[in-house]
Image (tube, rainbow, N blue to C red):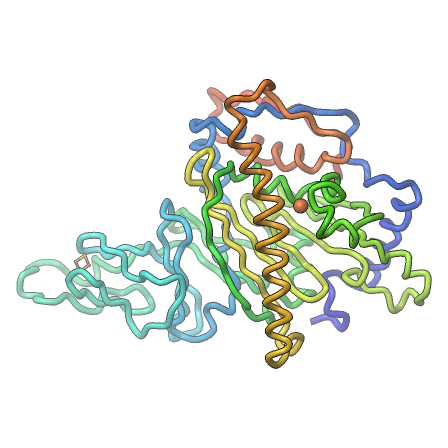
Length: 405
Ligand code: FES
Ligand SMILES: [Fe+2]
């Protein structure tokens, strides 16, 4: 861990704070767009488009299964939050993380049925077949009824999985290798420098929201709404906030200055720490929104069920020792309740659901994005560019200019 417990090296933190201070002078977010752009509302309602997104963004890129602390010991496992991709990830006796389809090779029953747990073996609830932590079929019950069936032919089907930057990553195509540092570029350094691996899980929640998965993620991608939608909650902290952004491949990092960034003037640069004056957010392609706050980390993932329905999971992590004792734990409970229940659920996602509900019945066939909402267009473009159906792949989102590339 770097000595600051901050996501970036100190020189980068100073540079970022200076970027934010300069933006504050002009009272403008960093330039994201050269012109206003529009997004067709069909992006949020078209089931055929969703199928194409699932076949591309959700099929050919590493996905985040959760924080590595869920797999702290051999036999510890975690299961998928998304029925479309039923996996189980488990730490083996050798310490390695492996993933398998969470499906018995006999007649397909689900082997692990809890979000997380610890087992010595996976024992199928249907007819009792037993699999080891390495996926090998160790035993067939009433084996005399299966003449000619060799256990070595019926091990669990393995999926790509790895542990990197403190997170568990999984891929959908058996046989593929996952290169997470290559995938995340310098943002992987941020996860390492912040020592995400050493955090501990406070809680993970999973709920279904009645909105398109992209509409939900986009609620995080601009600060324009904060003084209005969050007028009673976040507005004060970000009153004079400005946003700087960076891109790494299809991933976006946004740093939002807090009102107190002016207090940097009272401290020597050596003592500047980015998280004292800003929150740092990442969209990790395709479906994760990762948040670094001074005292906790949020991993939000979005798993589409339909064009207008999405599973939202929120895993909150903290640094052991930061919230010690019962007073600390009740402070943490309050932080979770504020962030999860009030800000995300009752403000951001409630308005996204409201927008979604009326999309098919509205008077406009597109949304219009101002210059400070450019990250929404970038995110949309990152998805669109990776759709894999060349026959029907006509870009409907205008090219986004002014991007860092
Ligand atoms: S389905 Fe698993 S043992 Fe029959
Ligand atoms: Fe918000």
